[in-house]
Length: 187
Image 1 (spheres, rainbow, N blue to C red):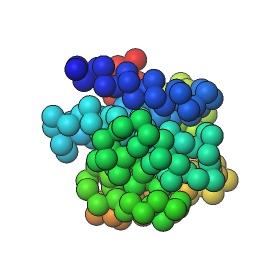
Image 2: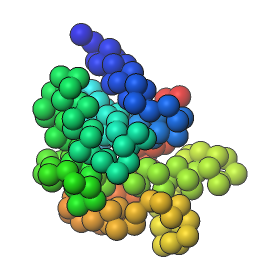
Image 3: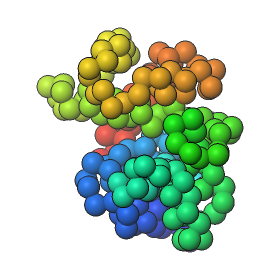
């Protein structure tokens, strides 16, 4: 099976449980960002990271109160690889009832960028260009500090994500902006 086929299958599975365009777009964004990070930190595993990113919120639309727990059940029923399940559900560590702590680089990055992609996406939509092109860390940092802007994006999770990666917040911002710019350029 080709990498593209696996990526398409992951998106089809996400669409089985998510109908709102926001949730589907979030899955695609996180998957694309994960693929970008894989090319940088785990070359050759881009498809694996992409699939983990695509499936991480499979249960959120239908089961928000059981997020990551129900996702684990759904993915197991679909005979998804246990490594993918563990990695995808680890992004809810400390926030949901998942028992999976982000331990591997991929899991730590997913934990860190899940909320951050939402913040960057919200900021992109309010910019005149309506995209991430030309966005800089300094302006994103101002939005991050504004608790009323994109209030649903947890600043604590983003900060904790940078910390568990051993990165400064600015480094995480910079890399995630670059990843999202890369996705836009490919579209």
